[in-house]
Image (cartoon, rainbow, N blue to C red; front, top):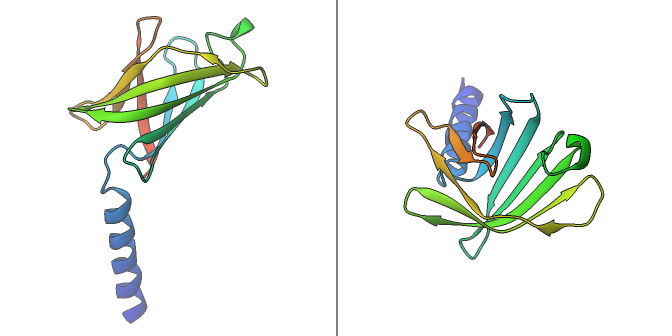
Length: 128
């Protein structure tokens, strides 16, 4: 019984710590237009900014919609996480300058962003 109480307390403390920052986490998206799967990682850095990395198996900026990676820095402004210093690459190619954007939570806790092609991408948290 004592082990169960310790495990429950540890889990509660770990969850509380991990969720103390609402942006930090691992998210996934399935594109409703082409079925591409994207993974978004948001990590808070010591200086209060964020490291943002998105990987996808089919990136619209890549020839033939191949795999791609997006990296950016982030900062919170109001109820948004602004995506800045954006760079992207296709496959193993070189990084190129990208466009800034923003993420926002909806009333159900789902993270969303508007793509440069004008549709909304929804990211669901898969790990705190």
